Length: 336
Image (cartoon, rainbow, N blue to C red):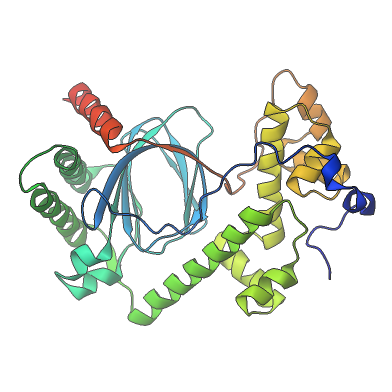
């Protein structure tokens, strides 16, 4: 059975017990988010600092306001560079990812379960906003004020807070419906999008858990009950890169982290990350950073990524309910 990345045979024969125990391997969340609406039924609001979030999707409508810093958001393979104050809207089951390489940021995020609004009008379950980024104009001002007011209620102990939050969200949705460029997907198209998102997330979950092992296109295709050719086309259509490229990116990001934090030989890094040879490792470093792995390690000033590689990792710091309440209060005081 052919491996996705072909490399040196001697590395495969080297006993893995000679390498260090699994070191610093990131615990990756499963990429399909089943949002847990705990504080309020059908609605989750939280503050999060985002470094990287690989391609994923969820059934919830997501709205975000950049409170601080900057961020790159990829939606359906389109890149959006966001800055403080920008609003973004991600449609249900729309594949998206986040990347931040320019310092600290903070996002006020809203994840809204479709049951909240499709009971009002079943068509809303198929709502599709054409323009994901909102930066200016009357709609922007209204949405920003309404969402901040909603978040303030969400993080405040008060009577009828659910009713107040939901009324503000319905107002925001009404403004989007009547002002923005919207459409309604067909039931068939919506179901297809959901199935595709589920498949993508199953694949990325599996790769995230097994990237350090030999992986074959045939194995993953068999799990999805499709041909290898079909799987290759599917990944290219969904995230714009092949499965092999996606796997290489995950391995590269983990190798980069090990080089920055651990004193390991390049051989051990290959064993930890699934690269079949140091030659292959160097090739991927050269593509992403313009230098070999050894040159990167020796450099006093570390080179930055040269391309626009799709983020694959999941590095984020989500504030607790209590922390979010405090941070939001400070933000509202500062901007008032």
